[in-house]
Length: 189
Ligand code: ADP
Image (tube, rainbow, N blue to C red):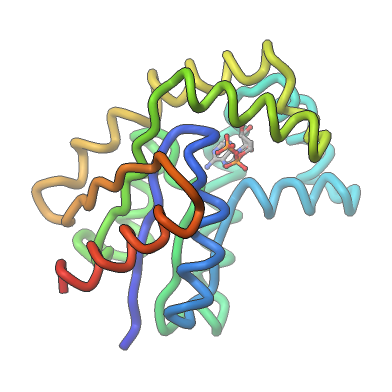
C-alpha cells in the first residue's frame, strides 16, 4: 500500500534519523529537503550556490526554489507509491503549495516529534562537534529554533482538520522513539 507521511518537528528532534529508518521499514523514499540542499551545495549546483549562505545563517531558502525542488522530486517514479516527506513544508505558503501539488487530504498522517527546547540545543551542539555541519553553530541553532517556532510550528494546527497528526515523544534513545512511531502508526491505520 502506498503511504504518504509527513514528519514535522523542530531542528534536533531526530526527524532525519527516524525518517530514514521508517522509510526503509515501510519501503517508501525518504524525501528530505535539508539533505537535498546539502547535496546541491556539495555538488556546487546553481541551487546549492543560492542556498548555501542562507542555510549557514539558519534562514529559510526561498519558497519558490523549495516548491519547485519538491514538486520535481514528488513527480519521480519512486514517489508514485508513497513517500516520507521531511523538512517540507516549513511555512504556510509551502504547505499550500504541497496541497495543490498532491491534493488536499492526500497525506495519510503527520508525525510530529516533540522534544523540549533545552534538549534540542544540547543535541544540536553535540551534532556540531561530531559532524561539523555548517549550520550547527550556536547562533545558527538559535536562529533555526526561532524560525521553526515562528514559521513551521503553526503548521501543526493547519492540517489537523483533514490529516491525522500523531504526536510522538522524541525523548529517549533512537530505538525507543522509533518503536513509539511504529506503534502509533499501526494504531492509527
Ligand atoms: P533541521 O531540521 O535540522 O533544521 P534540515 O536538514 O531540515 O535541518 O534543513 C537544513 C536547512 O536547509 C534549513 O535550516 C534551511 O535553511 C534549509 N531548508 C530545508 N528545507 C527547507 C524548506 N522546506 N524551506 C526552506 N528552507 C529549507
